[in-house]
Length: 334
Image 1 (tube, rainbow, N blue to C red):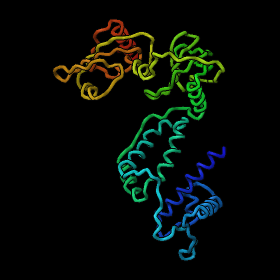
Image 2: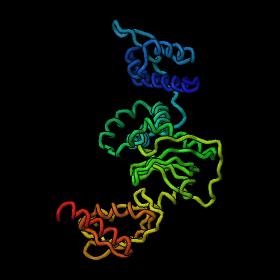
Image 3: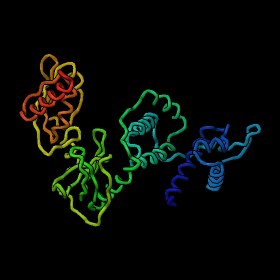
Image 4: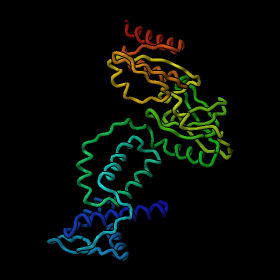
């Protein structure tokens, strides 16, 4: 483990010890309790207690009956970091950490957890009960990204290559054609949408901007010594918004979809990328005007609304919708 990371972990752990002793008051805590809390050996705790004493923290060794305990000097106020976080702010941070759990395994989530470990040490002990009681009112169930243990190094390579403007060489398997290709790509960024993490960049094989999912399709990725210049007019957020459902077909589709009850009752409260206009009609109907670089993604969404939908406007999209419905009917012998 690099020295710098080891030192950071030691500081985090020692703050955790001090906060626990502050919480326990004069009752104190045993070395075993502190070792369990920090998930380290008793020997490591002994070294930490010595370091804290040498750093002028009034850590005292005493007895609670026959048990040896450690506590802070009576009346001592632990100097929490300057950042002051109230109960509601503390709860919001803890909930954000749980909500982002679907990114577990990605490099940034690991760094986020480390940052949160530091922030937790600045949360006063008296907030703990409020946080623990309040967080039980929330539950988050976002589908977790798959295979992140294998893909995490590839994500980090792609991010570094983007910052340094270095071309990458990747091996990618297309789900559409089942063909594996090797490509040189100029990475323009990474974005998350619709339960998938994607690398966006200029593909030298296709001579166009393409996206590559960080999943089983991306089999390998390495940085090259070749540099590139990102186009001045490229905007990653605009690119991500243009494709419906994260699917892009390199062809702009303008579609009008009329949605009736019961689907309209929840659809009207949803936000969709590529939605240009939403018109309220009589009898609880909605008319949605889409313009998207991704017919396939929009088609999936419209089919999910079932019989509440009437497809209007773009003839090509209407034909695709009609064909898909006919295929489903045929497979179910309708």
